[in-house]
Amino acid sequence: MRVVVQRSKNAKVSVNEKITGQISKGLVLLVGVTHLDSEEDAAYLAEKIVNLRIFEDEAGKMNLSLLDVGGEILSVSQFTLYGDCRKGRRPNFMEAARPEQANQLYEVFNGLLREKGIKVETGIFGAMMDVELINDGPVTLIVESKG
Image 1 (tube, rainbow, N blue to C red):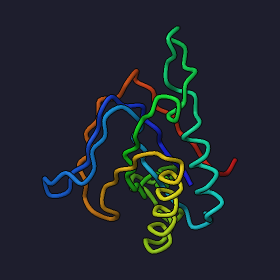
Image 2: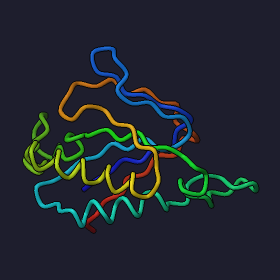
Image 3: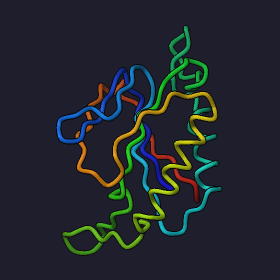
Image 4: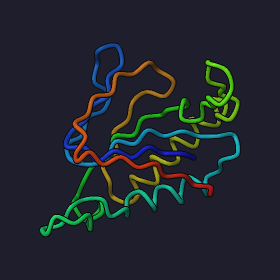
């Protein structure tokens, strides 16, 4: 699994101009699943992301986690994270998981985040979505489950 993590001041996702998920301070997660991923990958990433020390403490150092600051998550499925652009001009999406597998692991991942006491809002899997955020910092990281 591959997740783009963006620290945000607020964010929302809309489908057909209807808001399906909205958060205040927290993280926007763009979540990609490859055909080799498992529930262990989802568990690893959920644990890693909620404990990443990427929020500033009173001294201005990135020393606090999402759990420490009581932040929220906006999780958006993003199969294009596995687009391979090395050949030609059109991305190849052969590494992306089939929709059934990707949706199942995406739901498992979001459930694991909720089990940690995090408010998790989402888009709609497979829909054309508009994502708006105010990137805080900006702080943007890519976190993967396999090295």
